[in-house]
Image 1 (tube, rainbow, N blue to C red):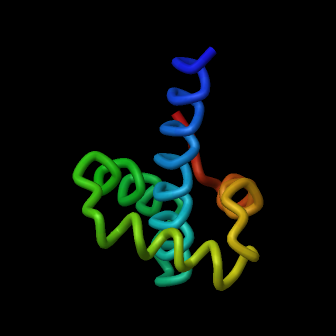
Image 2: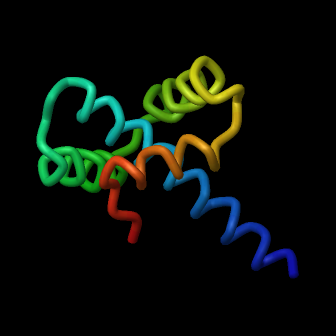
Amino acid sequence: MAIFFLKHTTERGKNTVRAYLYLNAIRERYSVKEANQIAGVHIERGSPQTIRNAKLYAQALYGGKQLPMIADAKRQGLVVR
């Protein structure tokens, strides 16, 4: 059970950072394809600062909730692996 929880939590964390990167790229007028590439590439090299920025973004725009932010990004075209 603990392994499932840890894996699920880690995946949600990665998806939160992907959503943050994606939504920022869309806001900066990148195409959906480009935004997905940005979100995919930068997550592999995710820095602690990017993680903090994603958390602050979720707090500011989504009341600190990760899942609504991920869902919003998916509605706008984010592809989650």
